[in-house]
Length: 478
Ligand SMILES: Cc1ncc(COP(=O)(O)O)c(C=O)c1O
Image (cartoon, rainbow, N blue to C red; front, side, top):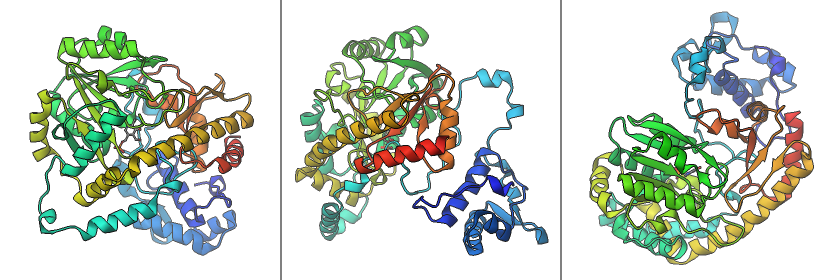
């Protein structure tokens, strides 16, 4: 490996050994380091980077412990030859045939490294972790933990802790226009758990599923890794192009949508499209999964009620998540099931889901019952509106001729269009080298639709940091 290509950033809060470790790991993942390649000695790399030799040794020790490096006798260390069969290796460019290139892409290849790490600037999907009411949360957790009795320690109701289901039913009626009984709510391991449960219950092998394209890569992956058939459907300024779905696959069994704010463009699905989608589902006995992950975060005008609130025929399985309203590692979500499918879902829960820890559910329930949840959401809405305005202004000021920013009514991302001579994928790869996790809109699409835009998360970016982060990004992209 050419050590001079490896850079570290002394302004970055991440320790130097960690940065070195990450650079090697990324080089391996991107295919620029391959099994059997030699890595520089710790002495030569330390002198190249101007860091202590111990720092490089610490990074190498971590890479060895994780199996990335192995000793090659007295010749030093090499990238482990045991890694040659791992799917994270980038495909050999020369071996990708034109035919394969034309096929629908697998959703976001190589994104399954989920090891916890420090949030990166502009990272998508993170709520404002810096202002989460931790003290209150710990107090409630301690109180709930003290109340755990023997009966709470046996196997719980696999459909979820009753007081939480009850609190969610009340919240949905007030806040999302959904009227349902707590019995219709199944608590899941985040949206991911809800999606998994729903698709295993309602889909048969070969069933077609409309997917928003571009869309949420985990929904794309869930369908691509099931026995169902993904049908990517384009999205425009009114949301999912329902008529395209009807033309392409009228007999689809399911549509998975993000109507409040489309992921990742934040476009809200218009009322005519919502009605068209509901009519298609009821005429065909098809299902809709409504992923309402960020429906609370609307900044201009009134919050839109959920699609489920219009679902007179009971075709919508509504999925909610606490990942954005509280925090993602809580791993709490829920599914609101229409009566017709409830029995099947309850049965599937018994063998398909593992349940969710009761203590976390109890703390969340208490947070809701005492009114903290509604207050927290209100504060976050105001904060996010400010953070979004400030970051959008800082981006426009820093990249006046490069980024075309148009803000939608809500959501948690800023979409910045690029001129044709710049590629979103290339810019994102450049930013990633510096640990900045912006995304390329084109990479969220399963088929090439000519998108070319950067996607920024703004909710976890404090206003006072926005301008400095943009200036730093400008240097990183240069
Ligand atoms: C489109 C979309 N839906 C749902 C979620 C929430 O998923 P989970 O509850 O599994 O964390 C996310 C999180 O990033 C998302 O982007």
